[in-house]
Image (cartoon, rainbow, N blue to C red; front, side):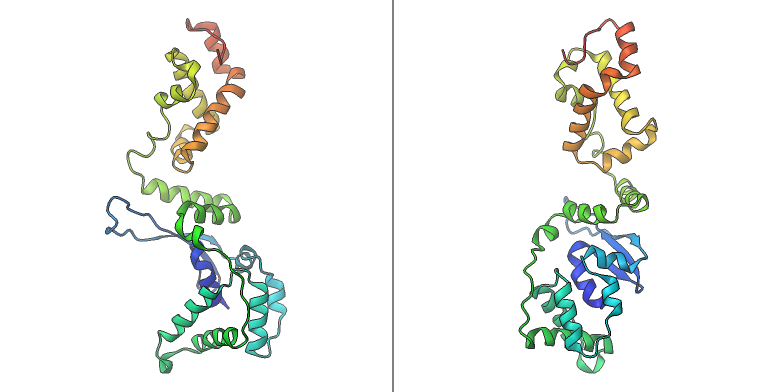
Length: 258
């Protein structure tokens, strides 16, 4: 079963290793030099195989209570319960089996071959799930996996890998005082307030732990950062201690938003 599930999970970048350890294969792509390959990073998602079944909208308890008496019963259960099993997935399984000479095939490979043959012989109609967007867009694949396996340990692994492969231009290109005044017109003539606001935003978004700010930047889309900055300026910053002190002490005094 795990071999079939691994083929279904491949487009999501997820893999079952050592029977029950579930990992995400995170590839760092070099777009300026595509020929330069980077070893994929393995992010541990869980040791609970039941979560993989849940990820694929399958009922693990129902699977475990089955007592399959034939390959036909097994095939029927899988095809009825795995919505992501497509014709292409079955073809890839069949190709994987045929790539090994018959005399060298393990019992596991033979069983997978019987599964693929049973699907074809039974003229079973499989669902037409569209994997193309998931395969084409790395960020979509990452978001799908992170939204499901959403505990802090998993999230931190993703961020650590991104920081490890950080380019010098990536973080400044996402947030700077110059960008802030382009996003918020009232700040263009108020350099002192811009500096106060920038520091206040960093404290707010990191809960006063400034060292976490690079982690926020590297893991957040620029459009989201912009929305966060604008929202903070108009909805939270006017009531902050930093702004109240500014209105009392600074010569640039003006109401926020004017």
